Length: 390
Image (tube, rainbow, N blue to C red):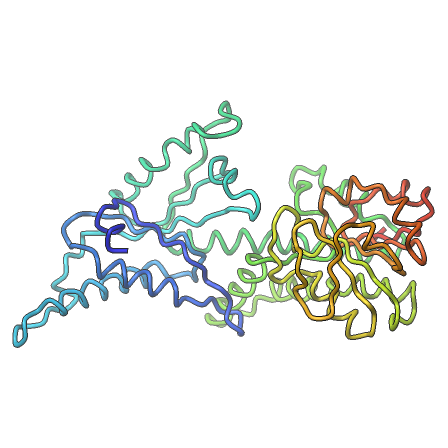
């Protein structure tokens, strides 16, 4: 760290803030890095400290305090025995500024998102720091590395520290809420005989709503949405506000993970002794991430009920939980299965010829947990097809 701090004009803090058991963000790594930066600042050369990590509102001022603490610790370590010890008021306060610059990268497309952002958010009060960040981001703002270089410049939003920190939480919470909303609609569609795919299409054509994140299925998982929505609920609680909508977003998502289990029970009745094949394990396609993946909840519940559970995923080659059998191909997966359940919408599964799979199954039943398969084609091939909300 010493060499990096010594030569850098802009220093990024980009460490994880995983959730604690109560949903609060674990800030230990941010704290350690901030103190470490302070211990290596010379107090003379101006630097911008940029917080990229997703942190609770108010963390920018806290990071500044930690950096000053690190600077003070360094000075105290250099003071000769018996000499007067400095305090934080004696430190050069203007040698650095803290900026909040939240990231909006999607897992699996992080490099693309870096060079093709929708917006850049910069939070802080220092004109000097803002000018330095504008200089740093100018090539990206002008889309010099973008896929489509003819698009207008990337919008740069300047805010205060707290608002920039809130923007990241609010954006992820809104997207999670949108998914939970369409899943709630899908469950109603199941009961009234409507098709959520058509409903979502009709909603998405409204420019005020848009079609993105209106795909009903098994809900959201991964490392961002669960962490950030829970953290925002916890932040609201700290300030005495019950975030009822966000709590409902989480509750709907937790229930949605059991939808495939309910549909399997409706079709197969008793699951004990039945063989279920899972198509996909990762929480989304084009990644190997299993964190908070709906597939694991489903597999654990199926195993608990006495079913034999197999899975095929294009990337996952070792079983993430005990009792789960990993197969090497969709054909091997289908052998002896009473049902297939599509859990992750990998492109491979959408292009797969399912006819050879049906011949190997005990019964040609497929439950499409992402509504991404060709229902008509599967039914023509003899499958009993069941989707979510259709």
